[in-house]
Length: 199
Image (cartoon, rainbow, N blue to C red; front, side, top):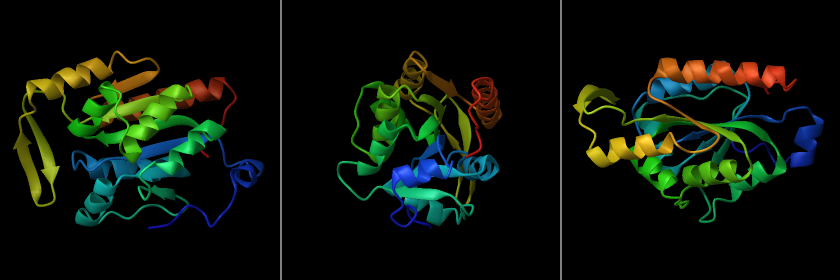
């Protein structure tokens, strides 16, 4: 996987017209993981924040990322890459798929991983977030590396998803179709603000 762009400063990136753009955070959930990667490929230039767990899932699902994707890894305890949100580099954060663990931490304001730090800093910097929560129904089918399996989210998982929907400047979606619709709605909003939405 690619790194962070070879030492280019944020100022250099801005002069090249590469920002603000989409940021995407991957968790370690396999739920609609390949579909999320497919949507990343459609967006164009994306800064991808990859948790340690997501790195493992990328290998398990044998997913390749598109050229031009700038990848920021979970390599520091302080999640240093999230400082990019303070530099105005992003107009939108997408968290997809969002594991039940990540959703719970976001709801309770815990920021101890790269992804939960992204969500917290996006909120503090008034960057709109779109979260595709994995646990949205009492019975679901999810895709494992060897094929589809049934899962039964717990009541606390469903309650946390509902709580996240109450957050300001955050859109929570429950399907890939809804995620696509939310991304398109965001594109239209950005276009109305004369802000390019494709890097």
